[in-house]
Length: 315
Picture 1 (tube, rainbow, N blue to C red):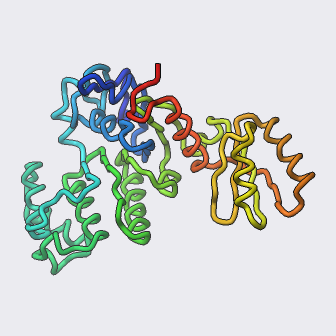
Picture 2 (spheres, helix red, strand yellow):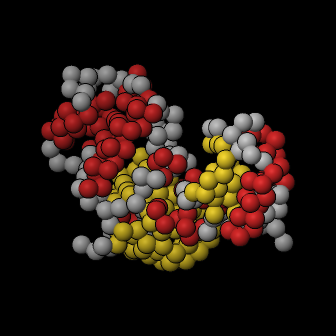
Picture 3 (cartoon, helix red, strand yellow):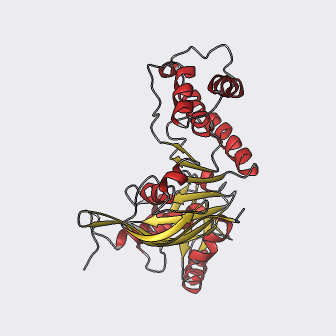
């Protein structure tokens, strides 16, 4: 089996006069958890759907699981599990009926045994006749994942999978995702949660249809090139306002009782820190390694600056 699950070049999707996905090139390693980040409406989900054979690109080429995304979409879809952001199973059907419906869709043999096994793996033995609509958010999420994985897909697509669920349910969900990855399932996930993005092996950041950066998650902050200092001390609001007004500072982010002050110009930022330390003894400045969330904020801010409020490129 190839060590690359997805490889695309020039992937493009146009709706009307708007280019939603603009000539994206990327590769997804087999068995990896690949995170897609970016503002709402940036083209993340559209990109993933084209990779998975769920949407036909207007231009570009590529292969997913060894199949041509333009000519063999059906073969790809048969090997993909798709979990949408909104619970998309039938709320007026029981757990067993929903799973049986999905088993029929994928023409699975021995459906009854498959569905019973899935219910047992969910930890819902004895509750198969419960209506799906009566489940809590966390259990709906687990049911949706089970339904998406019931046909043993090689590729799993997760679209904002933990939106609206509690922190424990999110942790349990990601434990299951890591288990699936270890078994060789390739996982594409769009998310806005930084603690989830950190758990991805690789990350692609997409804004307004363009791929700004992609690679191993641990390398993204360094590739962005941010230098960051952490500041703590009393009464941070006046200092925050002062720093935001200084042209040597490109980003000030509040993290609890601390400020994270960043710039791509390390020398200019060090000069500012030296000035602050000299005139202000009540705040403590410590240089730190830039992290994924700071890189994400920076990319989101700089990308938005290149577009008008209605999302069209500036002349």
